[in-house]
Each structure stands twice: as C-alpha cells, then as structure tokens.
Image (cartoon, rainbow, N blue to C red; front, side, top):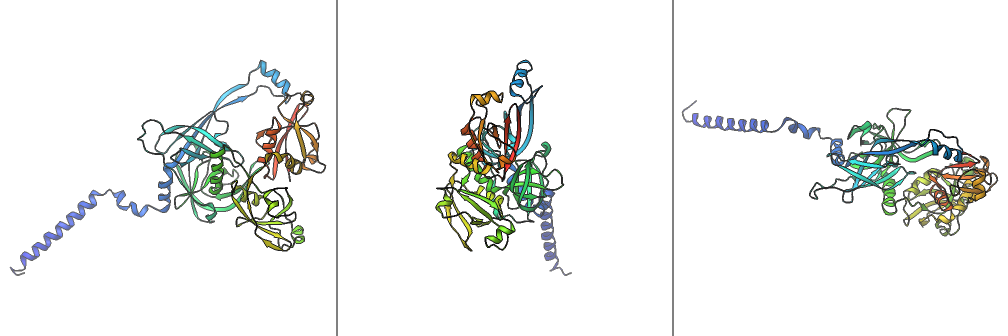
Length: 470
C-alpha cells in the first residue's frame, strides 16, 4: 500500500463503519414484532382489525315465571294462582351483535338473543358499556335491532360501524371469519370457508329457516348475532344457528336479507312483507311434464288474488315462476326466500313459463292487505274465524277475549285433516297471540309464506299446538 492510497482507504473504512452503525441502531430501535409484522398481516388479520371494533357483547336479564301447578284448565290454574303465586327468578344470557350505524347507535343481533329481556346491556371491544333498547324484532327472520346512546363526554371516540357486503356475491369455498362471544369469551375469532349456500335448516319442531349460509367456521353458543365476515372486511351474514348433531357446521343469515329486514324494523318497528298476490305449489315430474317443462324446477301458480300486482301483470293459474330478480326459483321455499329480500314499493322482475314460452313481467311489490288475511286463512289453512262469544268462553272455561273462534272448516283442508271443527278456539298463530280478529288477521298475514303454520287450538279446557301445512 502506497502513502498516497492509505488516506483514501481509511476514509472508505470509516464510511462503511458509519453505515453499519446506523443500520444496527435502526434495527435496534424497531420492535422485533413490528419488524416482521408486515409479513404476518394476512387478509384475515386485516379483516378482523377492520370489523372487530364494531362487534359487541350483548348481555340480557329477564324475569322468568314458573307455575307450581298447571292442569291445562285455565279457570282451575287461575284459582290455584290466587293461593300459590308463581315462582319468579332472574335469568341472564349472552349473545353477540355488531354496529351497523355508529351515528345513530344501531346494532343488529338475533331476535332470540333479546326476546323477553327486561334489561339489555351492550359492551364494545374498547370496554365501553351502554344500556340498549329494542327498536324492533322479527322472530320469523330471527333478527332484531337495538339502539344505544353514547353517554358522558361528547368528545369521546365515536362509535365504530361495520361495512355491509353483498351476500349474492358469496362463493362456496371462500374464506370467512366469525367474530363473537362464544360461552362469554369476548371477541373470539374463528376462521373457515363457506361450505354451502341456500341451506334450509329446522329451527323448531315444525319451523324452518330458509336460504342460510353454511360455514365450517366454529360457531358456538354466544356467537348468535355476531357477524360473518369475508376477507375484504365486509359483513356477509349474521351467525344464527348451530347444528347440534355435527362438528364444524354453522349457519348465518345472508346480509342482503338482514339489510332489508333492518330497514323495516327501523322504519316501522316490524317487518312489512312484500306481496305479489300469488299462491304457489311445488312441481313434481308429472306436473312438470304436463306444463311442458323438462324438469320439475319452479313454483306453480295455483291462485292469483284479485286486484293484486300479479293479477295486474297478467299472471294466471298454471303459470310457473322460474326466477325472481334473476335469482332462480327451484321451489316454493326458494320463491319465498327471494321475495323476502324485496321491500314494499320495490320493482320485481319475474321469469315466467306460460303456454310453452317464457316471459319477464315486471311488478311492483305492495304491502299485504291485512283485511284479506281471512280469505288467505280459508284457502291456506282451511278455516274461518270470528270474535269469540260469551257462550264459547263459558263452554271452553276461558276468559272472554283471549282467543278467536273457528266458525267454519273447509272439507279436505289442512284444518280438516287435523280434526279442527267449528267452535274450537285459536289462541295463537305462529309466534303471536290472537286475542281478537285484528291480531288473528295480522298473524295470518305475517306467516303466510311459511310452508307450515303452527296454531294453538283450544277445545274445552285443553289446548294443543298443531301445524297446518300445504
């Protein structure tokens, strides 16, 4: 090494040393977790970070009354209640929900999570807790809307909210995430895939939930009401049902139906079903061949109500509904599920098979005219009803005004097949009590799209639930 090159080489070594020192200090100053976090922040992690703050824990308290003695005879039971007061105890339960509108404090959860609750409290992921009130609930769809109001300092953090996706775009096999509070374990995240779509699941002995998303993301008690999320951080469903006999099978209500039901619950306090005026039945191979169809897919029109949207559009008995708003209709249950996503006043485009060719009429959905529910009860269920008389109340040993009375039963109808007869009392239709004719008509209208309607019938002192189906 010459004297001339020695200073240059020394300067190069000093520069390299400074660069190495700076690099070492930079690495030392960055937390190790942060240094490699970018490589571990998967789409699932991002989705959870996006939606998680808006997922809430819903806790409820309710008062449960239990009789010491119950004979089935209402008069005798009331007599014993005067001497032995029913026992009352407090019951608590947990569920999940998510904020859909932070500005208004609106939360979606399952109806069964908050049913009969005397007190509801909601806790956010940031540990803030608020009392909640029920805006509206719909047991048929198992959906409810709650409202909370932020308390204290108005400068506190605003309420977060989720982004709703489009459940029509869900693909079988895509990754989904369930967030909720299973067994009270707050903000638990489970991951799986969409296993199937348009599932029909038994919710009770004679009640079914239609058009559900099936997933293998673990859903346990306490998850009910929580969101099902895609990897884009959008809510595509609300977790609602667990198949108890199997592992890794859970169900969620599609978010498009949630969106439609929530709009009605916020606006009216209840769901106002869309009505086209069609009575339908499933096709079988013989009927399909008779009407010129290659396979038994579609819903066969058996009745068109006068002055209905369907009648005005020219639909007739014997036509077959093949699709509703571009959604294929394989049977009556799929027609009902497609119509459930339609709001009152919205346009509906049908694909109809009639006289060997297809047409696509456009209709505008209306609210079902409740005054025509008596006509519907006669055709669908097979009986007529009227206000209960004082004589009927004495005969059945019940109080006046607790039920409606069957006045006529149509031969060979569902009511006739189960043995209903004039003079019987109807105390409940579906989930709702029917103490008078307005209540009866409202419940018939509300349950009109179900394949089977559960009715509580009383004869003498004894009452029994029966199901009247197509």
